[in-house]
Length: 79
Image 1 (cartoon, rainbow, N blue to C red):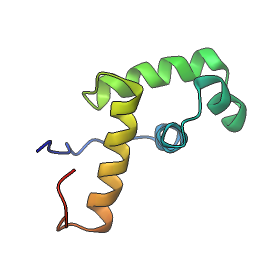
Image 2 (cartoon, rainbow, N blue to C red):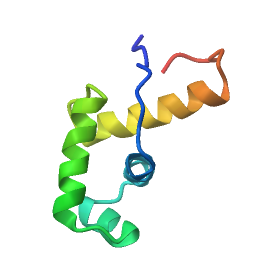
Image 3 (cartoon, helix red, strand yellow):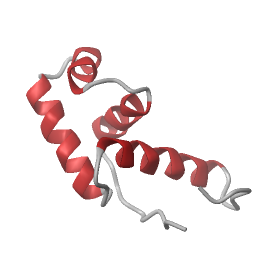
């Protein structure tokens, strides 16, 4: 069982993670948020470190699990 660390994220980081969950590329995220692709690349790399993940998929899973935890503090299933 992987424990979700309590980490603070900026509004921009939360938006980027939400869009990553929708399988958008850094370029597509940049277009949606009106950011340069290079900046989104840097934010994505920082989020991988901040969430202690290995890949973008790990960041998306972290975001998804943290949202589930907030909505339902007593998990029904272990992800």
